[in-house]
Length: 316
Image (tube, rainbow, N blue to C red):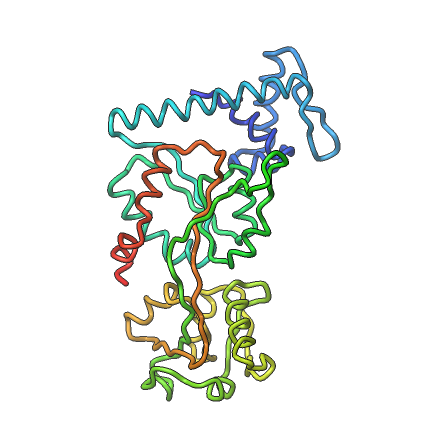
């Protein structure tokens, strides 16, 4: 198995910063420095040039990195082949996920996956689409699942100088739809849909600028020749959870992912309406780095992300 010192070395080389490497490894900065000093003492040479807050590999560091990455890949290949031979899948699985997916979909999916593969340790990190794409590109995550528009994802991808194609590949995961959520006690709760004219008379709660959900909703309004300024916006909130609480508190209505609101719908506390003339559908995507070695745990999890299987797990 790859030594702790070598794992730390690879991470510092990738992050080019001791603090960022410590954060990625969930270690203290002194612990990271100690592991690097241990390697430098062993090889009797400096592995990094320290320049302000950043570090740069020396010639010796470049040489060691080539071998360290090769050793890491061999270890991962051995683990996968051994697990395929024995049928015992184990290891670490690090997933980057956008908010709706990470909070309302993956916990159920991972819970079901762990029943089949209890020895796979799964970690979910929630962040925006661009940061997930960059982390997948840098091989920090085994995979990412994003809810942002695919155009934004493609913009975030950085191509290899030797290959004009993005290093990251994307494939459709699930379809999402934004629905208008209102309290069950609302006067319009008996309806199944409302018009845009009715919408502009209602107190509306919006997400913060830059939110993927907000972008989709506003673009749909523009496509329907509806002036966004006509919305009766009473509040701007920075998370789906806070919007759900505001709806329940009677502070207004909002458009929200069907996946995020389904718990309140099932409990009868919230009703959902369609908005006539608006198309509010989008696709979630799985993104992978084509150059990252795929562990057996990653492969099994990707197989598990079958749409029919996910819908059954989520009971939708």
